[in-house]
Each structure stands twice: as structure tokens, then as C-alpha cells.
Length: 89
Image (cartoon, rainbow, N blue to C red; front, top):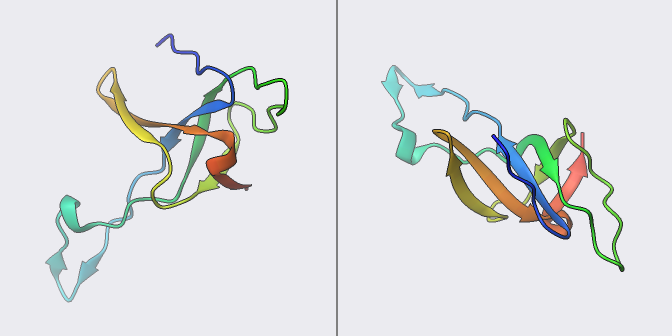
């Protein structure tokens, strides 16, 4: 895969949704909570006003509605601004 985010954008691979069952009932994929953490895959160069703090392989927490979902090579990723990342774990 060859993708390079531009400016202050970050490519994040979301963590897998946790499997939960309630009293033997399996919750379908559409009803599962979206994960709010993931691994940084690639980062842009930043802007003249903002240096990039995150780097590839960082584990991060991000907001519930952060980023734009994209599918590359059959995998789902999020592209978001560095400012959408809440913390590095």
C-alpha cells in the first residue's frame, strides 16, 4: 500500500470492535460500537503552523465522529486531522 496523507492529516487503522454477547445473543456488526482507538499507519508533513506530533505505530484515541472512512486493499482506515486525535496511548 502506498498512501501518504497531506499536510496535517493522519491515516489510522481502527482497532477491531470487541465481540460482546448479551445472555447468549450475539450482537450484529451494525449494532456494535465503533472503536475509538487505533494505530497510526502514516502521517503528513504538517503545516507551517503545526508540527506533527504523532508518528507511525503510535496507538491513539480519537473522537467518535472523527475522520473519513476509506477502504484500501480490502481494509478500512480513517483519514483525520491530527487535531482530531485526543491522546497517544
